Image 1 (cartoon, rainbow, N blue to C red):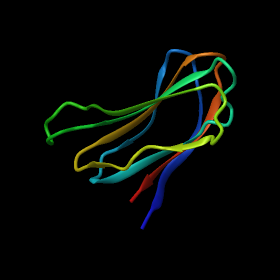
Image 2: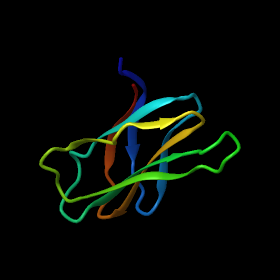
Image 3: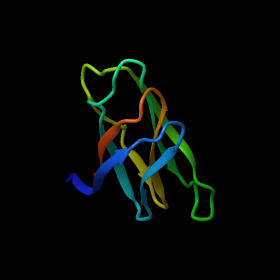
Length: 107
């Protein structure tokens, strides 16, 4: 059963990778972001990072880039399973800094 773990709104600073959430509990997670505020010329990168092994280094497992206004503005990552740690980030690399509503969902 899906459940919201944490949510918020991130005001993006251009070329700054903002950590939206760090989940230290084992689970399968989905990042959901509302990109409705994207305008022509805006580019946003959403990333998910996990650890492989309890003593491992956190590394990127998923990255999606979105640009310009979206026909379907709510986007979700594929489910990411992590027994150790999952980090969800947002980085706006082009355009004017926008604010984005987001949510991490546990499956």
